Length: 317
Figure (cartoon, helix red, strand yellow):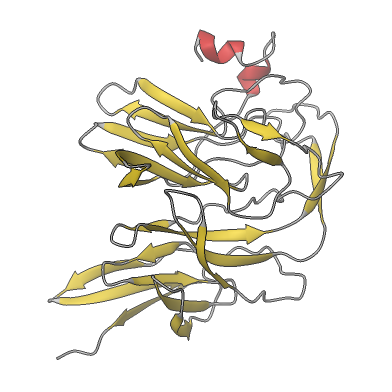
């Protein structure tokens, strides 16, 4: 860990147990020769008094030179995270026009509740807007840092530890200029205590308490403004909403969006309007993301559900 990282951690050895590992794939831009990768939460997961500071490079997006591994830039979504809001989301790359200027961007719907559009050449923040209900931060300031209002949820609730979204990938339609995101609406309050570090054991130092129901929704977001265009709300499998973990999203050039929910419904949507065109009961919770492929000139869509793989295709001619 470099000198700059140590300056973002307190004096002592807290950074040596600082976490910030990664567990989801990144993205690659061959033109810029950059690999984009998200990092996880700092440690302890929740108790922050022993790791004051930003805790670089936790909860961040790293842009790395693909040949050397050197960091070109980074952007930290949640400095000094005390909510387990890993930023391990798969980054989505696109070319957009923002405020009349063409931009090569990278987009992230983050567990902290904000949707971000960054310039992928420089890391400059272009757009940041809430895509779920949260009182954690008023907004993301001009300097790219959150203006934090509420760390514990004591005056209002915050997204729970699974976050406003999670490991499920989002997707982008370049024709419609829309991002499609699996959003989680949850409400929790938080308590903290000092944990004792023991190698190989949990290192948390806190807990969250759910307030009200949890549900997931498929949401279409304009990445040039952060505004929501449409929503399809999944019906929770239990009145309390369960974990609210639905699947990832895949969009196609034909104007379709494919996604699934915790009740096992695999669905196709009109990408422009969000209309549910059809659904299929796959027999188990859909937590994965569909893929599409061609075989003998015919296009298929494949979705895992539980221990079953189901493939769909248009009728043969």
